Length: 167
Image (cartoon, rainbow, N blue to C red):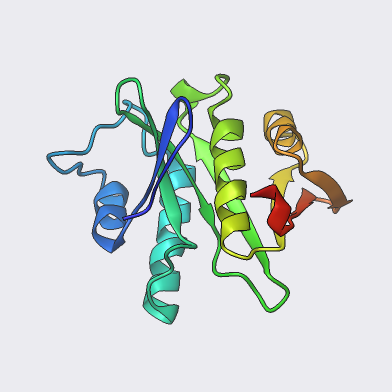
């Protein structure tokens, strides 16, 4: 089982069974969640993760990670890859936090950990996007070293180039 740790967070790679429990909002005996987890963004990401598993097999290590606080063990959100790296070594990521956990820097902390993990797995480029009015997400991406590559009518598109020395 893949676990990533930061000073305040634990990123836990979910499997098929855990993804289904989260989607059903039926925590298992060892699951501990903040009251507003999962939120709609988590459910969308987990459904996409399960579809990818059904179509292409187990996605790990490029799957979905539950974000939990180390202090109390409560799940506060999720972060993950939107599939395996393509032929260029590029992978897209997404993340989100339960509303009660926002504003604490958790998203940036989790994102930096996931960038390090991607670098260790031969990823050369990470892509992300955010709605035009999501200033908090823009700041999170910029804090993690992403740069805006393009903007279209709906989204800002960000990227981060990696090299083996960044790990």
